[in-house]
Image 1: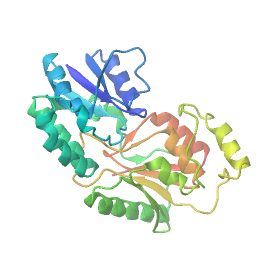
Image 2: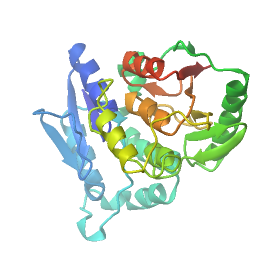
Image 3: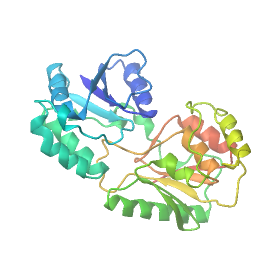
Amino acid sequence: MLALVAGQGDLPRALIGALEAAERPYRLCELEGHPCAHRGNRPVIRFRVETLGSFLDTLAGNGTTEICFAGRIDRPGIDPALIDAATMPLVPDLMKAMAAGDDGALRQVMRLFEARGIRVVAAQDIAPDLLPDAGILTQMQPDAQAQKDADRGIEIIAAMGRVDVGQTCVVAGGQALAIETTQGTDWMLATLNDGVVEMDADPTWVDYAWPRMRAARIAGRGALARGDRGGCLVKAAKPEQDRRVDLPTIGPDTILRAHLAKLDGVVIEAGGVFVLDVAKCIELADARGMYIWVRA
């Protein structure tokens, strides 16, 4: 039996769909305070960090042998008063996880599950189509400068990865315009777009964001017109990252936000970045004269 720990964002929806299409049994789990928007009426096992030991006991007791982590989960605080007896022996390991960077913290947590005989399964093992083949997916092709910017972006992400910070940056003319921090990609792109962060919740349809974009333009907080910024959003996994968890993700919303930030395209590492609804991403990019490059 597989346990799917589903966080926020659209990646859990893709995995739930893949599991149910394959008729593969699974149990949906949530960290309290980080609900999965796509759970519907499915039964959910909820847990807290302070009761992780009891959660491990529950999984072991109901025959869980595999676990997959999918979706964004902000680093929670720990209330010492809520730590239960089953979790008390894990406190030193949890403290190490809280003190580490994202990749280090996840490695520490995975070790706790593996010590109980629960194997960590990668999202791409459940839904291989999330990782597109290398190549340029769009009609628009990156030019020579775009290729230089992509090279520079990969170098920047590698440097960020060495200190376990971020998986995304924006590069134009060889210069880093923005780098991802704990606030995430949306916030990073908003720094290039006069602070416009919020968009409609459903990123599926080609015209879903236009009312919000129009409102932003009228309010003077953003810009629809293609400006002279150019450059590209670059996403890649961190060097030496355990690719069973926390691979970066793009989706239709990413393409629209990159367009609002007046970028020419999006570059992702082949085999290192999930693409949600790839057909819609291509449609959105083609309609806006942008490129999507899956870079080998």
